[in-house]
Length: 159
Image (cartoon, rainbow, N blue to C red; front, side, top):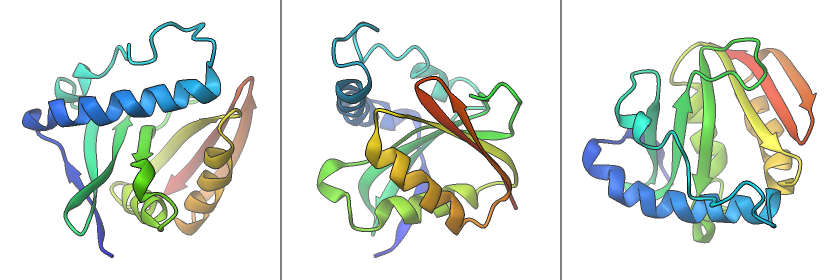
């Protein structure tokens, strides 16, 4: 299995939208099951990933087939500032538990040096278990785990 990250083009937008909406609905079922935040597919920054240089969308490929996606930006969930943040990360449900996520996370953290951040909802037990293992494999420096309300924020340096 070879896992790579491929930057998305504007032509990839419709395919991502389909996968992205399913991901948002799955996430909302965990963190907002009563839909208090409204339509889970109403993601205000989707188009910005093709308009702003600080936002970068990637396909996660397994032997050249789409296995998921990764959205990177520079928004700091902690408010402390960061160079890179994993905003959204998804491995397709039928492709999970095969090591793709770990390989994709490792590839992501190898994209650029600097401060990285990501946040995980406490209502997402799989994410809470996954991210510490994924971050540890990158051998981060200055790793902090910040508890903020319904989320856990990981802040660390790579490279």
